[in-house]
Length: 218
Ligand SMILES: [Zn+2]
Image 1 (cartoon, rainbow, N blue to C red):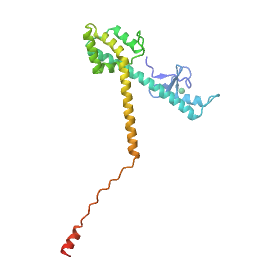
Image 2: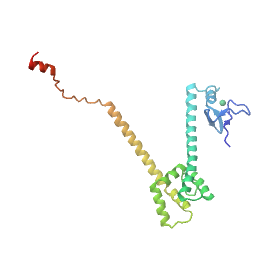
Image 3: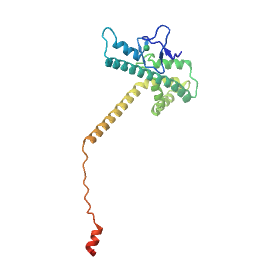
Image 4: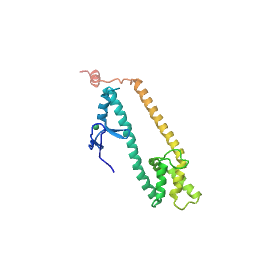
C-alpha cells in the first residue's frame, strides 16, 4: 500500500509521520527515513566528528541525488514493464500466460539459468521495437517452425541476443559522445581563432553632384 506520509527517524516521536513523500526532501538511511534538513542538522551537531555546514550540505545533497536517480530509474522501468506487456499482447494478438509473466520477472532479475545479467524492461521493449531484431525473430520462428505460443520462443531469442544488442548500443552511445566532444572542440577552436577580416575592395563613391558641377559648371 502506498503511504503518503512516513516517519522521520530524527524529528518524529512515536506515532508521528511528518515526511510528506510528495513534497519533502528525504533520504533513506539503513531502511529508515529522515528529512534532509534533519539529517544535515544532525551531522553538524554530532558530539563526535561533527561536519561543517558546507560538508553536511554536500553529503546530504549527494545522497539525495543518488537515491532520487535510483528511484526515478526504478519508476521508469516499472512503467516500461506495463508498456512491454501491452506491446507483446498487441504484437502477437494474444493474452499472455502466467508462466510467461513469471519468466519475464525472472529475466528482469537475472534469475534464469545461464543468464549473466538482468535485462531491464525498457531494453526488452526497445529490442522488440527494433526492426532488425523483429526480422531476426521472424526468421528464427520460420526456420524452426514455431507455431504454438511464439512469444515464449521469441523471448528466449531475445535473451540470447541481449549481449550483442547491449554492446551495439554502448558503441552507438560512445560514438555519439565522441561526436559531441568533437563538435565541442571545433566550436571552442572557432571561438578562440580570431575571425579574418576580409577587406572588401573599396568602391570609389562617385559624388554625382560634384560631377555635374565639374562638367557643367555652377
Ligand atoms: Zn525530520
